[in-house]
Image 1: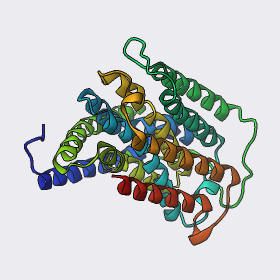
Image 2: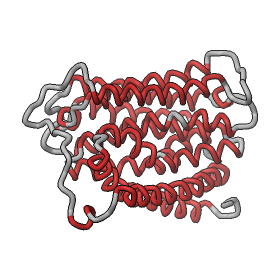
Image 3: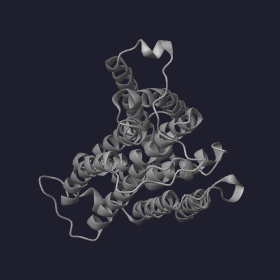
Length: 345
């Protein structure tokens, strides 16, 4: 679509599309917070499922559209690179929340379990890499396992929220997930209308995500960059901007469980990019068509997710620079991964 454009206009278009995604993400946060209260699902579940899936829509479209074009590396690295970027965004949100360590204040068992689910889902593509290249009805068997594991994990998450077997210790810094009083304008709108407007924003994200994927493919060709580098550090970060802005907006609103749940939930949803991309990729198993640079981001995402879960369990009140030690480690791991990826390219 953008193959005839030179590199400078392509870069400008990429920035504009990323900006549209970011603005849409800000608007989504308010809707998600209200829907959490209206439906009684709570911020952690709404953040993990509704907001996480909605803000990931543009990334889904990028991975599927590029896989259809036979660009396996770009499709794969867009998914797992986005997970790493979004996890790093929590460290930025921790910086924005000055009262205490964000992981301490946003204590929620559901988010801890979602993190464990994420690690399990990230291990599955690694399992595909070390097993024979086989397909069943055009898909690698792991592509059938990922959505089943994701759906099962959501059911367990709901059970964990309704009947938790343990609860975090409440402190002065802990923020409770309690329904907020709506303003007059919002109160007049029905829940169905809120869902409808939220769906409209999702549609915008999907369209812009497709255009962003086309721009990313064109940049890969024009600039001569590796598809893994463009996928992990350009399209992944651009399509992850909704997670950044919704997380910062949620922190500002005091919806801390929504902020953390939106990131972890978006990350678990992003693993579904892989079976969808595998289905769209026509030349065999997607997991065997990509290289070590792509799986490098799977390992990075696993390391960062493990650090995050540790932070949610330890619940340090305050760390270096008034952020948690885990937030510092997240930035160090992500920054180091970017440096290594650039050197390798």
